[in-house]
Length: 91
Image (cartoon, rainbow, N blue to C red):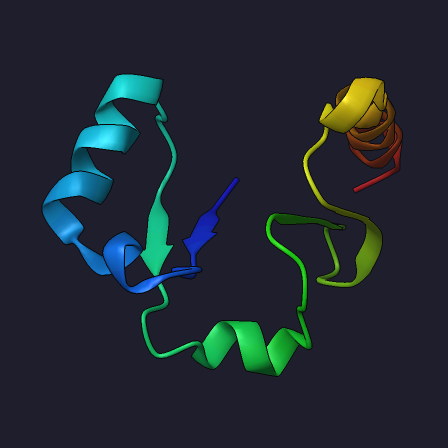
């Protein structure tokens, strides 16, 4: 898993605050800082947050736009199920 942090507002460009948030949330995966929105533009992203699942061959297979649990949505369960599907595919 890789996270890509693209600031929504100017206050989210503060790297010290970002590092603290990463530590507070106990994220144990690499996070790329995309302050210039290079990745954001390349991927054609338009919604914070966006989750993409990429298969072993490098193809985007599934995505979820918005928070996984926004207003009772079941995005986390759906994406976990999709991850299991991808992991079960032959290598």
